Every structure is written in structure tokens, then in C-alpha cells.
Length: 365
Image 1: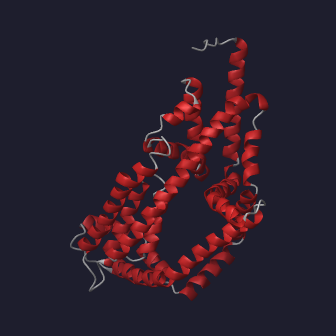
Image 2 (image 1 turned 180 degrees about the vertical axis):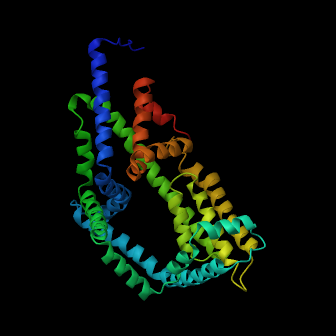
Image 3 (image 1 turned 135 degrees about the vertical axis):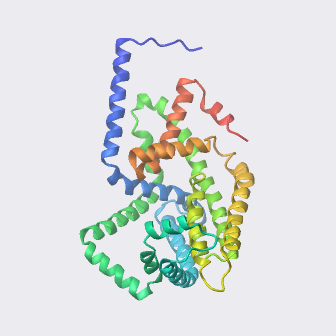
């Protein structure tokens, strides 16, 4: 058993000074959160793309990373462009049809048989259905014209948005090229006398983040394919868009269930189409898609993949996202899991006295 440290005046001053420094660092991050957001988004994208970069390095057998990085960006762009070109025409037709149905529902004064009058009045009173219908029903030419007018009227704000996205892309490019050096630089930022404390924490955080983001992304991708297929078979308009939305929401535990509300509204609108299926068959098919996909993910995918990767409880993940998101906004959502993992690792390693190997061995199997 290690000897208990007494709280001398010198140690108390050091603790207070450390707390002040930590508060100052947090305040600086909060003040610079808007400027740090593009960098953090770039880091996240580069981190997620790093396995593909490593694969391209092995294939090309090049030590310098610039060619594999450019090849990775080209591959991602080609895949995204191909998917967009394949599904965009059908998505535009579905948008036009859905826009017409929303216009019809907005002008309707009769309640639907399956929809209580109170819900019918709430939707008409609190949702601008005509604006949604116009947004979905605009032709490509009109939409492009409206976008150009909006861009011109936006002035510096619109230009600033484009510049910010350009900065994100530059961050992604340079971070991907210098990824190993950046990772080593983060370790070297800690003074040498404190690296005995920081290195185990950084190692554990790196392992945990690698396991969580990449394994959760794999599960989310499989779930997105299942959602796209299920919504397509159910006859829901824009099945790929809804499936991709569910896949993105799947990255946050249980957040995918929030998409049931807009999917239900789309089912209500689709039921207005004469000759189309009624509300209940369409809605029940969508609910069956949620049930099958979630059951397969929760009962088979997650236990086989995620449970072997990390030991963060979903409730802890949700709490960390809520707390850090409230404190730092979008930047806090991005940094929530790394910061929470640092806190948990520090507590278990330096308060409870567990070693990194013990924490690894206690991971669920």
C-alpha cells in the first residue's frame, strides 16, 4: 500500500494553482470555441480516415504520406459522388411529390381518421407547412436561383461560411499529411517531468477513442444500410436520406429514436396521397424497420463488436455528451468522449490505484 500523502501548505498551494490553471484553460477553450471548432472537426475527419490512409500507404508502398492522403481524399470523393449521382434523381422526384402532399395537407381543413383533432390543429398552428412544401417542391433551376439570391443577400455571412468550410478542408488535408507528427506533438506538449503521469492517460484515451469511434462507425454504417433497405421496402419517400440520417444519429446511443417523429409525420403526409397505402400499414412497416434494425444492432452487433472494444456505459456517454455539449456547444460534443475518458482514466489510475493493464483486463468480453 502506498503511503498516504499529507496535505502540507506547499502541496495545498500546488493543488490550488493546478485548479486555477485548469479553470483558465477551460475558460480559454470556451472563449475560443468557435475558432477551435473547424480544427476539431478536421481532426475528427482525419482521425476517421486514418485507417484508409494506412491502407493506401501499404498498397502504394510510399513512406511519404502526401500521395496516399490525396488518394484517400480522391477515393472518398469518388464514392460520395457516385452515391449522390445514383440516388439524386430519385431523391429529387420524391422531394417534389412530398412537397405537393405537404401543400395539400396544409390547405386541408378536414382531420384525418387516424389523427386526433388536437394533433391536427397543433401541426397546422406550429409548423409552417407551406414553407416546407415550397422547399421540397422547388425545381432545380428555381432552387439554384434561390440559393444564388440568398448567397448574394447574405453578404459577408455567406462568404464567411464558405471560408469556414474551406478552412475545415485545409485542416483535414494538413492534419492527414502530418498525422503521426501531430500525435507525437500532443505527447511532447506535456513537460518531461509530468510525462510519467500523462503518458498512461494519453495511451488509454487513444485506445478508447480508436475503439469507440471506429467500431461505432462500423455499426452505424451497417445500421444505415439496414434502415435504407427497410424504408425502401416500406415505400417511404427518400429512403436513402432517412437511412443515412438514422446512421448518423446512431453514432450517439439511442439518439436514432428521435427520427421516429419526422418519419411519422412523413407517413401522415403520404397517407393523403390518393391511391397510396393508408397510414397504419406504412407506419407499421417503418416501425418494423426500427425494431428489426435496433434488435439486430443491440442484440448481435454491439455485443460482438462494441463490448469487446471499450467499457464506457451508454448512459455515461449520453451524460458526457449532454454536459460537455451544454458547456461548449458543438465543440463540447466533439470533445465529450475524450475529456470524459481522461477524467475516468485519471480517477481509476491515480485515485483507485488501478494500472492501465488492469483497466484493459476489466473490459467486458
